[in-house]
Image: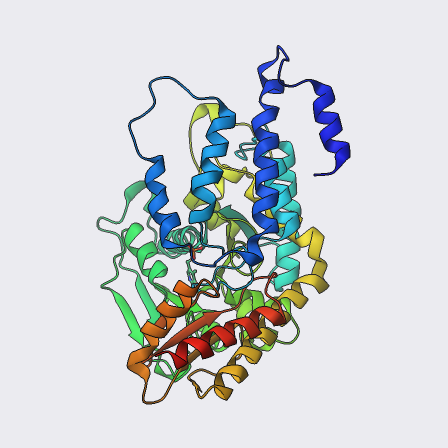
Length: 472
Ligand SMILES: *Cc1c(COP(=O)(O)O)cnc(C)c1O
């Protein structure tokens, strides 16, 4: 924090002020200092927390306090016990799941919007929240090359974005069949069909079960060696079919041939839904866009802010080319809610009250610009290729075509040692990646999705792997 700010806050005299809000500035300032020092030291921290730090979490245990504590003590305790027990995913060497870091502008925007405490429910409750979400929506559609009149809803993550889009798809197809699913439910409804590649993400299954459609009815289509659905293996499609396509396989990074799938689906009146939690960001760079060839002909798309765009959690985006279907599936009806005007956020997503998460998307896009987003995508892909080359030099076999930010590697003859190797590197605190199974082989899986990852982080990760290999 600059001297300017400290001087100003002291001048406010917040400790003795009669206004409770002014007195609340002291713990806020303390939290701010602690957050700065956490981030400042992130690149030196162990990526996985030390055992002592995890054991130290017991310091939070105990009964609900009868009397309250000074908020300054609350924050001090949180930092002292909590900060050492974090996984340093905000640093440059966390390669598990598809996590990403947090961009400076996005984190700063969250800090400011937390102070605003907006509920982005409608224009009445947050003019700025709604307005910035509209700006962010238009920018996202432009950046991702999607239809400009598509509806965009900001939800907690790709899981809820899948629920949201599939509810819209369900509404649309059942409405065409003369069935009002929001009122009548699925009892006695015409049956919908779901068609998906065998590499369908678990959260799309979860979305189907939450929507009452079940997972048993999914018609599974074989995939090629990169995990891409084989279009020629699709069953006959019809106007009751929802195809669950994928942009970005969580292991290989490969995308289904979405354009070809959507072409067949559109000819049959079926709906193509694209789960592109991280992979849809490939559309934001000229170097990777062709992997998604024809994706814009689908009807709905899911992408996460909190993965590759590096916004804070919770931030997923549901995009639907049929705004009316999305609105019908998501609208809330109650007399006191009729505030008129354009569609309110509460009528575009499952959440009623929620944070101004679209502002973080706006901040990320405002700070990066089109060129900066493309650069983030390209840089992560370049790191992935460098990591794969380095692993090959160490004797690993790369099991996927490194077309995006994902690397799956194994050591021939030593596949059974891979999980142990991942655990030893995790325990060293140098880097974090997990074991995986890919096409029947045990290996290591890396996902490079953070703006904070540098060339040096890749070198350090390779060095850590090399040293832990030797001790095996
Ligand atoms: C991460 C991921 C999801 C789930 O996203 P959340 O934001 O964690 O809910 C869905 N699909 C794919 C392909 C993913 O990578």
